[in-house]
Image (cartoon, rainbow, N blue to C red; front, side):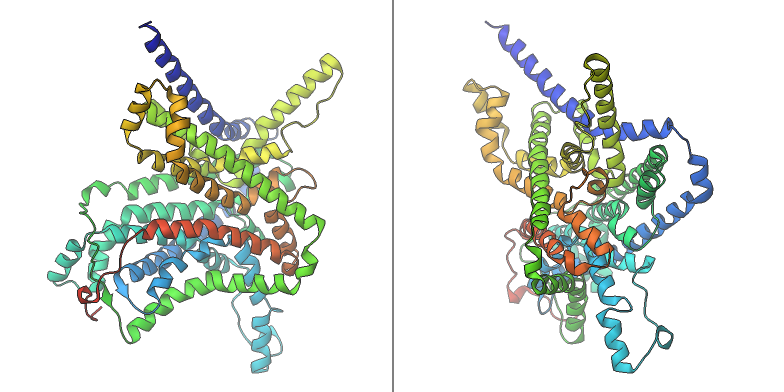
Length: 563
């Protein structure tokens, strides 16, 4: 009986290793497919793309990335520092409210502000009535459908990535370091610039990388504003030029951008170990702002919140309530059901796969296992347009191969079993958002002491029963958090849904995009509002996780107003 135990352990190890390996291969399959079709296209138009539109795509993409990154950096860092280091009216509200724009998809805010600010919109119409202007020649007004408009609007909904990570980093910093900088003669600004900002650099690097990846992935805004980025180039080359190989070549170039962004993020965190941070002092002294400084801080925090959430939500709610009866149609319920079904299926799939990945890494924390788990998380870095091509190629190859074999053998056609079906969408969602679920589950598993595993093994339980009986009940909050965040992300997903959905199949995201693109925002307002309201769920979770139970410092320990 003694040899059976090592044999059983060996079989378990092989089982978990193969599970992690197959999951990683599934995620890598779209990437490998894109590279294959890019290297061996049926019709190679790479030279034509280089001579005509490719450099324009690259230039527009770089300008958009630089503009959104810089703007999000300024808004996110500035507001995070104000709410953590300063006391001014409304600070407690802004601490969590500044995350609210995170719930608004970029394409929704683009539709709303275009409707408000275009020539026939209420803002310019009111200006013409007030000042007696007759035509556009009588006055100048910024064009919202432009590169500058896209940068401003996308920054309003993406800055929360920088804000939430920078704020968490500022909250964790030791007050002794701040006190030392002040004792050496640093002003509050110098203390922030020379001490706090460098210490928060690793978190800021992560936040900026997320902002830039979401900017690279955006399709709805750039398409609506006619900004020809790489993401739009993939869509046009595939569907308008009917050249899958050329689209795959542009998508491969997008992956180069992703690799560069990941490299810059790692470089930004390279010196994290050089900063010694002691345990946060819960009685941190804040700068008390008064007079014009307090008003300036209030305006600086209120503007991103008002422009990024209050105005879009107000406009959508006004349109939705004004046309409430017209939304209760069979088509609208079908769009809603499709969105909820796809999002729930993808959330369940990612939670199951994420649990297997996280638990396999916990059981056998080897370097090879870690590499495979990291590869399985690569899907989050893939833009939606690239992911759609990578998913379609292997699924279409499987369908065509099976159909040809059935025709030759039984004279029966199988049709499209996987490509062009709901399965393709769920697969794409799962590949893209697996990293989100796996990250939440890993953080929960890290909090479970290894003694729990040993106790379960000593009672005769194997690895699978230990997971079912011990770990799953303990990590239930992490499972629910991961599932909710994936659910909301899938509700907002647009580019992959547009390119992979079956015929006559729409979700709330595609419904909003199609109607708003036709200048019919009122007809899509209820769908957009539902997406925004569902998006509030992870915002609440994020706010609670960042703030935790950090108490307010007593007034007698507050710094006096020389900020």
